[in-house]
Amino acid sequence: MVLKREDITLPVTLFYDGDCPLCVREVDHLSRKNRKGLLRLVNIRDKGFAQNYPEFDLAELDRLLHARLADGRVVKGVDATLAAWEAVGMGCLIAPLRWPGVACIADWGYELFARNRHDLSRRLGPLLGKNACKNE
Image 1 (cartoon, helix red, strand yellow):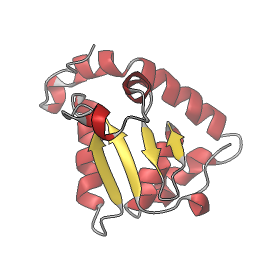
Image 2: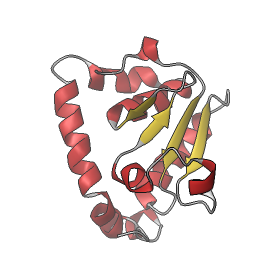
Image 3: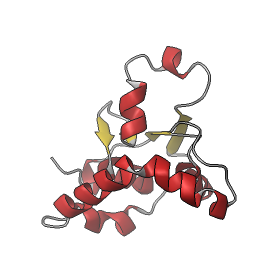
């Protein structure tokens, strides 16, 4: 099922990889837009993460972006991105990625990106002024 903007319950908790320069860049952007505080950010690399969130598999969180909606549903990939952007008031910019016919292409592109995220971060991190991913 493809997530729709109207199905997103706020606030949203986004689980991100704080050791990934590409992820941190996106989280920094979202943080600046989070004026209403409806996006909660959780670094999966923080000490104690596993104890605080035992219901999550760290390897799966590292493989795909995850977000938990206020009603407890967990969404992944492009749906997690849509939820995060909706929480900061910019969901309309990402919503076209969930349209019929576009969603399958967006999901495929995200899966391709996610599989290569560590390598991309290793290559692009220095250009972004960040170190490469620590977890390769």
